[in-house]
Amino acid sequence: GKRLVREISGMRYLAERAEDLAGRLKGFFTAQRMRITPRGTLRPDMPQPIFIVGFPRSGTTLVEQTLSAHAAICAGDELPFVADIVELMPRMLNSPLTYPDALCELWMGDQREGLDNLRDYYLQRARQAGFLRPGTRWFTDKMPLNETHLGLISLLFPASPIIHLIRHPYDVVLSVFSNLLTHGFYCAYELESAARHYALIADLVAHYRAELPMRYLPVRYEDIVGDQEASIRRMLAFIGEDFDENCINFHQNRRYARTASYAQVTEPLYDRSRFRHRHYAAKMAPIAPILRPAMDRLGYVVETLEAIA
Image 1 (tube, rainbow, N blue to C red):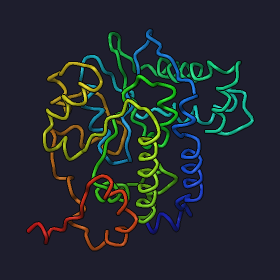
Image 2 (image 1 turned 90 degrees about the horizontal axis):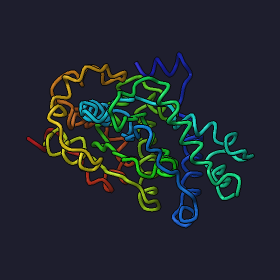
Image 3 (image 1 turned 60 degrees about the vertical axis):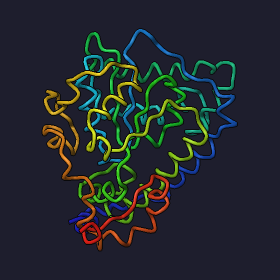
Image 4 (image 1 turned 90 degrees about the vertical axis):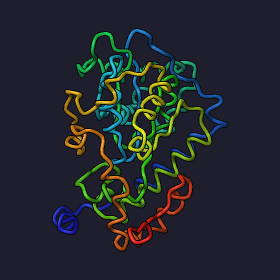
């Protein structure tokens, strides 16, 4: 099916564009530069974003459904506002440079408040979208691959929680390939390109974590499935909210999730998608060298059904 889609549409993974962006982001967002870069300030008159980031099919919808069952948190869904800011930034900062280099304007006297202007654009879009509930203190933003822009997010909203969903790379890549997705420079059109983009973004996230101060919490999908309540308590404590029993029964959340996981999150928590890649060991073998660095960094191993038996 994917082969036919590639032949009919002519679409291919835009590898050069993806690699160029990742390289420029790593070159700009360094510890030395961030020490002299201003940060956005907190606007206390509005609910604040919780960024639920992760590669597509890593469990971000599950976490959004879970957290938005809390009385203090409403669901924003897949918000394009960060990507919009990336495109608008040169004009808003009056810069001849593109993102991320346009952020250099922040060191100029008339742009010292530039991040607050970009922040206000984001929050204004959230207000106009109409999903904010009275009395809530937070809203979720789970746009897939927002982790690409963790540097920008940490500048705009340094006090906002960033919850990064991590799942076995083989399961993620297999699920991405099994769906018709356009996120990630069209990486989902082939199994190998899905693995290549996963590895590229995993390496970029590792760079951000080494170079930037972030309010960042990694959460494993497998841990949520293995001990749901403990994982929920950990995430809510990180956000700064008390435990809410409603979060356990996320499947009763009446909101409709507009993602490929819309059906799964209407069911109680299950484990049938955990380590699904074991059924496809032979087909997954060619991408093993691509994913090996990320696997080692995250502490995952490849297990076949025969080895488990």
